[in-house]
Amino acid sequence: MLMNPFYVLKPVWHDLNPVRGRIALHGMAKSSGNQPKRISNMKRFLLTLALSLPLATSFAAADTGLNLFSIAAPHHGRNMDMAVMYPSQSGTARPFGENAVFYGVPVHDYAEVVPGKYPVIVLSHGWGGNFARLGWLSSGLAEKGAIIIAVNHPNSTTGELNNLEALNHWTRAQDLKAALDYVMKDPTLAPYIDTSRIYAAGFSYGGWTALSLGGLRGSHAGISKLCSEGETKSTHCADILRAGIKIEDIDVAKWESSYKDPRIAAVAAIDPALTFGLKTTDTTALNVPVLMIGLGEGKSRLYATDTSATGSNFEILIPKANTEVLTPATHFSALGLCKPKGAAILVDEKDDPVCTDPQGSDRKKITRRIIDLIAQHFAL
Image (cartoon, rainbow, N blue to C red; front, side):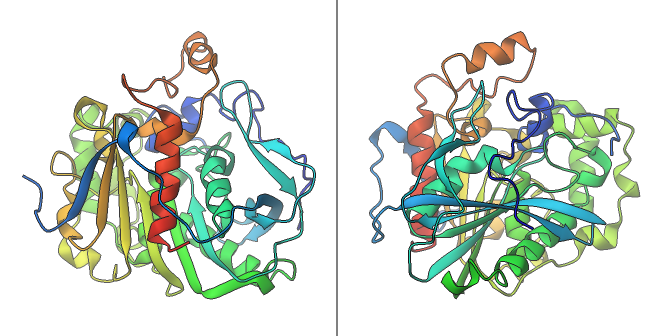
């Protein structure tokens, strides 16, 4: 079902309820209680972003079209919102995802698709996030010649974060499978899809979702051990424990099952979560090309999404992956460009400093580099 093109995410002031509601596992911040020496053969580059150069692409940049849908999610017993961005013919543009804190991106509602066949990327937001906050990434990849399918994951999206239900990470893989199924049957979009080039990408908790679709399996013992370390290591775990949630009560079989989608040909994960305690056997089915993008180093690296030897050391399990760390940066540098008064608004609301980056950091270069790295990985 198509949605009103002027649909506005709630709460409208900055797509957060409050800002913390968006961040938790992709910042591991607050949310409402139970409501609803590194491996030498790994490609890893510690980048100084000011010196980085854009990567070339073969696709002439197009405008970005946006179609909004509400589609069935039987595994949740209700509908979920979906946004699809794609290369479009020109029309009247409007800002998408803009609010008092963040800049938006120009889109053309329900515009005609530029004729051609395009790869598809299913994109997953972080814990408590939404597809608008990753609009910069969707738009940037659409401009390079891809169709981007993103959803607001029920129970782990802005305004309806349910700590207990959100921990059912497998439902997020199911969300993206349902969204992909829908778009591949949609008469306005399906004719433009190159079915041999379907990819998955995600940020934070969404990075895990993308890896899961690629074949990675979870470790219940791993998350249990991480959270047993308490507040000193993971603020996300601290929030879960304060909410009275017992990790041991989570369905182990479902947590550790495979949610691989055979249609996924490659994966890109930005600062992915849930990688603690994994073993080689958990990566056996992750047999597609993987790009890992880390954000920050030292004190600027978020522990819960640190896949290096100072964190989960997940990278040692996937030596064939392309792994890059962007610095100076923080986990929240991937949330898009903040307005000049954004940081002050968050201070006034006593919220997390998601617009505050390390000294010398340039969020515009960071986001552009992320777009270029993913575009190169998916050969856009």
